[in-house]
Amino acid sequence: MTYTHAITVPLSWQDAVERTRGALAEQGFGVLTEIDVKETFTQKLGQEAGASVGDYIILGACNPQLAQRGITAEPQLGALLPCNVVVRRAPDATETTIEAIDPQTMVKLSQSGATREVADEADARLQAALKEISGNVGI
Image 1 (cartoon, rainbow, N blue to C red):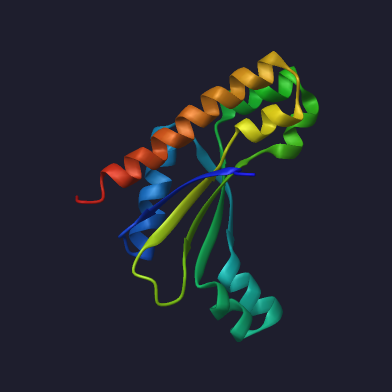
Image 2: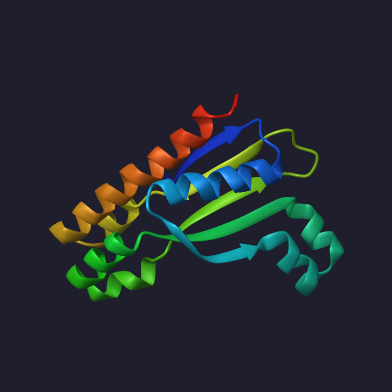
């Protein structure tokens, strides 16, 4: 089962994170949460565990208008929010992968037409953000 949209780009770690934040903002998403997985693993499990994942950050992105529409239509939908976006780079890699949750996953769990509309719009916006990042690699 595929549940993400992903791109791999020849960007540095920091550049990929910055461009991801910018592209999400252009699509109306704010970042509500940020989890530095490498740092968390290092603190909780030790240096070796953190080093094994490379650079890995989870951005909890939210478009307030879409979230409001979705929760109004189906209150339990909040359990699936925010839309997670991962920026990751394996140790010694020369490229960075950016993955966004496929909002169509929500549709598979709900029969609501309103949820389908919200998922469709969120999907279009997240894919536009990924396209923006990959399209601006040469800049």
